[in-house]
Length: 205
Image (cartoon, rainbow, N blue to C red):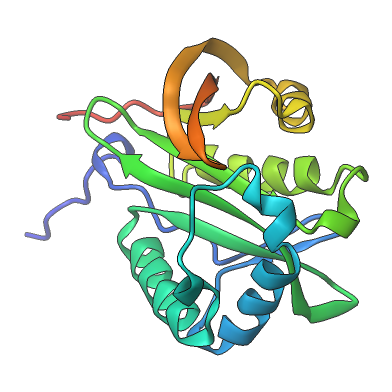
């Protein structure tokens, strides 16, 4: 007699889709062959990102380091521990203009992740990051991934990031003092989160 399949509440979440589209952007996973394009994105925005990112060694900006990072990201995507998407414009698909990263995916009683994102300096102010994040968060909250919570932290003085998260519905939950060492000092961060109203509870956690 065949064994019946588990009911939907017992089945594990499927994998996230590797490609997402929005009206103006294509969000896709990376491959080691993208190492040069990723390096170009990071180098041309190095000064722009320095104020918001932790200290980074010079080797980080080399194709070899980025190829290794892309392999690790692919493994994380496959095993469900993290989901990184690279942003490209459809008219220039070889040029990376941003990224969004759902990292530190935790299951059990948490079903949560941390959100990080970055956009090319020359494309700021046009709503592209909000557009990309809506698509990415929709995938994280879909039955494919079925997360309950997405957390995002930002420095208090990063008003652009604060406005983007507020526009997407993130709620401020507190202030983490001296949270990360960035730009030469320990920096406070505002803690925010967005909850999934369509989360499907799993039986037998």
